[in-house]
Length: 191
Image (cartoon, rainbow, N blue to C red; front, side, top):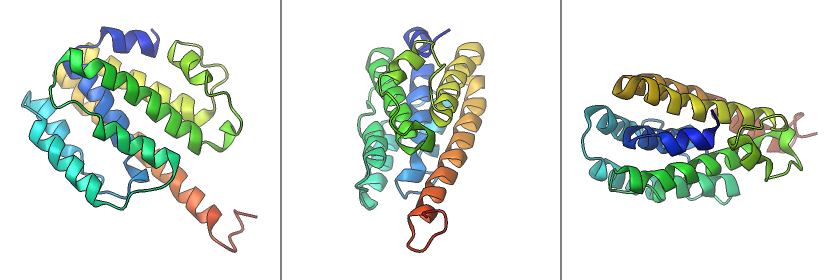
């Protein structure tokens, strides 16, 4: 099933987890604590309102130094756009936008994506992954895995979804670290 279909069929918890996981995986770009979104994950597990946790996460995010790079700006907008109302109607467009933004972030950071067609993201989300760069294809698989875990296991799938997110965050952190080292003056990687 394509990612577009998975989002279209997801329930409220799956949509919230999907958007949250996309945001969570992009945290390394924002210079904030990896645990920033943990209270939001907890509210999903408990079935509690996430409005207060969302506001605290946004406040912490806005207290951090804003980044100028496009990828970091996309990552910041994901959390900024999260709806306080946790209903399927409010969450579906947000989860879809987070999916696109996260794939775009990964495309911007993937060295193999240099000059890649941004329209390929739409094709990948629709199921045609043949021409996707590796980092983008891996992010697409993670997004599908989160939605499949929630669809198949309900609230019990949240732990697995969080594990998928943490793994993706580690991958992105390594990519960001590698890029920073390559950009340092005198770096052999940058030569």
